[in-house]
Length: 559
Image 1 (spheres, rainbow, N blue to C red):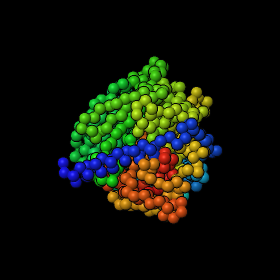
Image 2: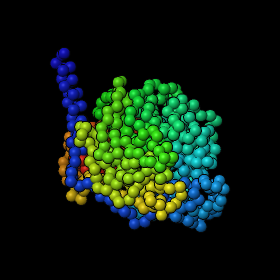
Image 3: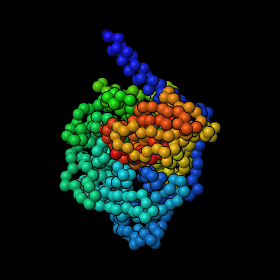
Image 4: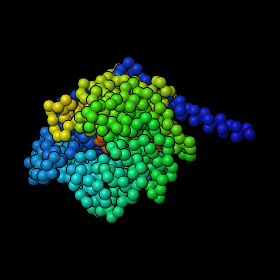
């Protein structure tokens, strides 16, 4: 090897190693003895949070339940009337429903703004478009073929198109593609997928999907499949215990992956899953691998045991990982401190995963689970096996079936919902839960407050095209260096039934660090992702992480 080639090779290796060292150093525990803090919010929205999503810029949660019960604890205000007509699940009778089933909930002021939804959103799906607007799809009965649109403004409300989808979509998964379009997969008795049509139009056809038939069993166990866009533009899809790679352009299955042993992982044997952080390097041609994490679930018969035999079996206690872009993918598995079913997986700005909510026994479904998981788990994917899990401070509110958890821009986690009942029942063993909480992860330890970096939002670009270099102004008492620093951006997901649709975290490539551009203020130059395959167009929560302490996020649009 010539001297010049050797030098280039050595520099490339050092660059790659330094990138991994920087991620590891920036992800160390800054306060190992602080196990988090729970905060009960002083007011509740009057509805149980079955579905939730954070809208960009306005910092408002959209929270909604289902119209099928024709009841909540928040009357529809006079200015939203006339009241809609809703069909009752138990009686099939359509009645006037003057209860509210959807709200804006401001995460800063805690103000509740009622919304009016017409079609039934029970077990629906959703996602944010390139402009940060919510597109909601499917649901129950008359809601199953519906597309709904919601913008974030004080006077906004739902716009609904009840016949937009070709097939009914109940317990379906909505996936954002590299070009900003959406596909919706599955749903009860719908072994197909289809693009979400443009507003005011209807689909004439759907695309048959044999994989959903192949993964169906007598108890289903393949509803709300996990769908992830991977860096080559294809879709990784997991249902029950099997997975494939789908080319959505050619509608062709490119490969099948090894089955995940141990049990079933999708509704009703509900596990939680995340796409682990996608790390980018200065070299745009460097390979970007995609690794999937799946934690918990239950045996395939769990729902039958609960419903018919009234016997609740232990949930699964494993977490499995697989690099789905590997030429030879294999599952690697490790044990969690406790078994979990129906947990939520929240990607944190540090690249860690918070496993929160759920139960140790049973499955999804009304009264089909017990022994709530009060303690969240912090999972550190960059640590070696055996040292990845930390049990955190417990809540005292059971978060069972129909619970949600969403990351907030200040670094806390919004937690709500839990309705183990067919209707609103405050007297049940696990009552219909209206209370909301915020959980502060360990990086928000009080003793770290003075060390927390701050992005100077007014001095930083708020939008950029793919590939552009962006300078982020950061206020910090400490000098910055690449070994202690990460810059991450997280897409806010649509959360329901332990699935966080379109959640993804990208660790951006740091191009340059300029310390003390003026006293106490530094500049971090990062490269935006190269394409929509890495980061679909839309809004992200961008955060600077210094020695494991993330700044509050700023909203950043990639387009």
